[in-house]
Amino acid sequence: MNRLFFQPHQAGLSKVEAAEHTLREINPDVQFEVHNYNITTIDNFQHFMDRISKGGLKGEPVDLVLSCVDNFEARMAINTACNELGQIWMESGVSENAVSGHIQLIKPGETACFACAPPLVVAANIDEKTLKREGVCAASLPTTMGVVAGILVQNVLKYLLHFGTVSYYLGYNAMQDFFPTMSMKPNPSCDDKYCRQQQDAYKLRSASEPKAEVVVEEESPVVHDDNEWGIELVSEVSEEELKEASGPVPELPEGITVAYTIPITKPTSGATVEETEQSLEDLMAQMKNM
Image (cartoon, rainbow, N blue to C red; front, side):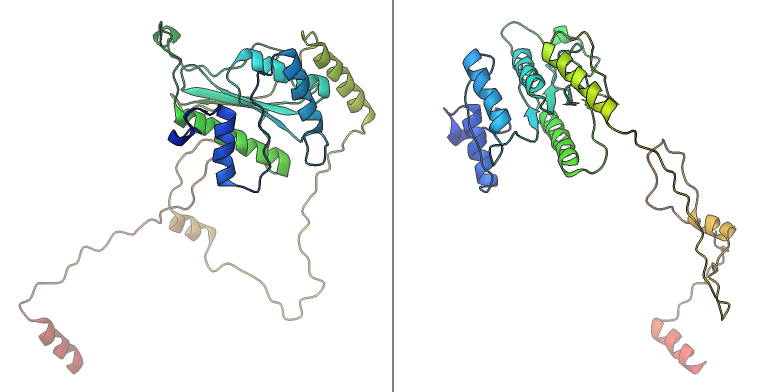
């Protein structure tokens, strides 16, 4: 946040205040609430839960909570609040070595909460001892933060606007350009009692809902009732000619295809035109007399 939001003229402001000023300049039509406090304290935690349950534009619960905090205690506070309220949220973070990060969608009772398992991080194959030195803060790369933030926002759009496949967990390893993805079921013996309650509630909801039948639709050929004139659509080139014109397709991993192929060019005969000392005007005059 200090590298993505703070500007020189905002010196002295808190992170949330600086973030609001910057975002309001980008889009003044958005409504902002700024609360500069520690959500892990009892009083602030209660207010935090109140804003989740009544923070909608009309006083209704919010649609989604995004976690962009940088410490374990704050994440656990968000996890506890969302488990108690049954609030869906997305957790995100960047590692201390600043070259990996992740996002995680958490649905209380349906997926693993933040307390169900040890926190998930992306292995970066770097010796952490080289990073943690006395008197030196953890590494920070705005590029890694920007990539993870972009992945988080993309996942939010897919979830809220109902398109594409929403990622339950997506990691990012900048050292190897590695994007692991997975999903985890909740732990029945989770330490968070609200998580266990949400698991029981989800099982009851799932049992009461009818099972969705998978119907495979078969494409039927288009048949016209009549074809008085005997019109047929045929290709002007054969499949063999089309393959020859398309050129070779390289071997690619699953999920990647070429936008177009390079046509195979036939070799030229090798014949060349003899050089001549005649000028262009003389040659044009000869062509006119032909």
